[in-house]
Image (tube, rainbow, N blue to C red; front, top):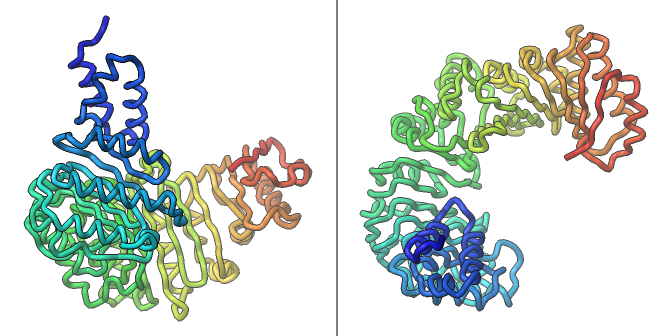
Length: 504
């Protein structure tokens, strides 16, 4: 049975508009379909509304093919366009044509654009004469009567520009989604009031407050990575941020990387709301030993409340239900930084990273035990754990910073270890006279600098203690398949019942 023309065109249009499928695959599918038979070809080639969803300009495709797609799409009433520029080194023979065609596309169909995604690097395209960035900024000063979604991503990590004050000339009546990384929001505007999804790179507390104040219909706010110093939020902003917390948090879905003062963190998470979309946060917190002493405002009690609200913001996590989320914990300790990462394999959109930085003059002996105690209730039920020391391992061991945290982890089934973490575990087990992680079944071993005899002795001792206690580890996996396998097998041959594997 043959499908009639209308059904075929409906299928082709559905393929071309499926945003869950990469544009390259969609474009290739329609191209191949146009070559199946003459009937299909006669239907597809003049169907400008199909090609109008497949305009994709990038430096790796054949230039003549990209122009052909654009010619087929030019008469479409609405267009969806992808302009993906260079991310690495400049190649004039590829990048100059990209500039030319990308600008031509924008100039010719701007008033009919419904959806556009643009990525480029400012510093690279400045080499081809007038910057592509300048052409783009000139273009977005025009009214956009059909635009519903626009993404502009400048891949230069050191460039942050404000959007032009006269963006869209004040007129983008249908616009609901705006993503502009790295850029800030310049001023209140009529088109901002209808935005429901906003992504941008804030440069100050004022930027975030302005965004939620100007975008009255805002439902999802995502903040791009901020690379400046950690005075991003100042202690004196605490009161205002606390007032805005109930307005910001119900909309805040993603923090790509921001530096907060201790005061700002406690103020922002002084209220309790769940993220409206994904739950992703990467935050650096500057902390001082005075913050962990009672009597301060904010102090330990305010921080514990904020930490509870922070976890709840991410998928409603609490101390009583975190075990249902299957999260895994990673701790990295250095001389003046303690990094905590919480993630889950089942939900890549759930991710938390808190980097506590006390600077060169901070007292880690007071700060790190406080942080370890604060996270214990959340971490104690994890099934996978990794501890890594970048520096000051002996200081952490001597001050028993993580002892209580590690002793509470009775549900751990797998760990990732290196030489430094094994040393900490060894010291703690000797001091306590018992083994950690009584349910441990799998060890992933990732040494930083190769497999040495001393390191193998540490591994063997760790495993043998569990054999002697009647709770042997069943599997150990070495991360580097190029290690001397015969040496490893000889060193661990006395560990009964152990399965040894290699892999990444």
